[in-house]
Length: 485
Image 1 (cartoon, rainbow, N blue to C red):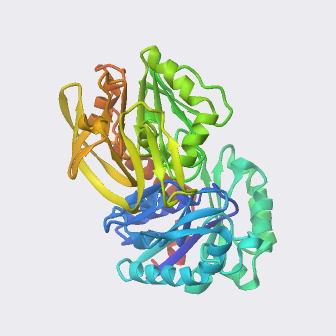
Image 2: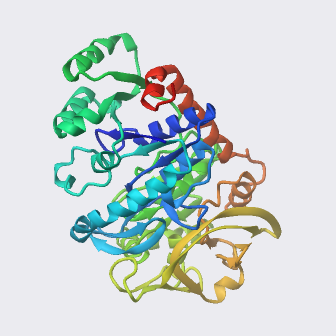
Image 3: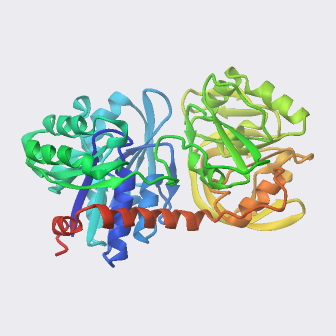
């Protein structure tokens, strides 16, 4: 078994896509490969085959490997609930809530879970491609580090450092990061990958020569900027793709604790949808549909939604015939109240909902984590749907007597009597082409629409990444580092 770790000079340097690219490149050669991320902080997560929860980016990398995501692949997942606190997911299960200082002290214990998960994964696969988090040069976080060099040192694996040239200053990023590492950490850093380059490579070559001379470490290659690449984003909310004239205008508020915004990736791709994300204090544009997304702290984000003036906008939107759709936490907000008596998602209390559906939600211990299948109940017809649930809340009320879908464990969601308001607990409802078409039709797009196969799109994007590895990196040097020669 061989482990190679990809670390970055910054967050969003491209670690996730580089790991996914290497995983797909190796899988296409018949190598039994798996991804691994010791610690992740993200509100985008996925349900695993063993009933756990891991970061969405790691699940994407498992897809690149052609294997099912497993909780061993991301043993520590931190889901922020405030600026100073997070829910700690340990090997797929909720461990508890911690503030930043308490978690910093807990990391030495968390490392044991990290090593155990890595050992379990290593027993099943020949190659592990591990991904760091943020930067290994965060001086204030280096004590008891489990996310970057702390893990690499513990398992004695080589590291490649990725820098994003599209941001500018890539040579300062790479050299500066290397300078801030310890001597043993610099020794295990075997070279660099420069990411997102556009232009004439010959103009970059003098800089590459200088970098190798300055650091005595090789550049494994320069990956190109892949235009039109739309694939699961880890942290940032992605912009929409191009849409056709007369497209359905869908507006989504970017909640402070927005979770699983990857739900909207199929809509970003859909030419019949003009998807607009609205951040804090931005003007709220007119729309055909307002979609309230998932939230890690529903009560907190519901208060924020009111402070930003969304209830008045939504009320006017409905008076003029618009539609509102809620997903998970966004669905809970549509009811009369959301109560969190034990502070499972932040401060304990009760918040009045938007009052658009006759139901109330109460947060209870024991997060629902499961993949689900069933049929949509829209417009008198039934369409197959699949997705996953990931929530603490339990909703009750007469609105649930008209469900959005019938799934494996019973009715899901609700639809108002006038069909202007609907919601679901399911994430991933737009992923299947037929379900996406049925939902968009119910939201007003019409029946004559282009079908978007999001699953096929993701596979093609992963192949694009693997092709870039094959064409742009020194694959012989990579194989040698992975002991595949």
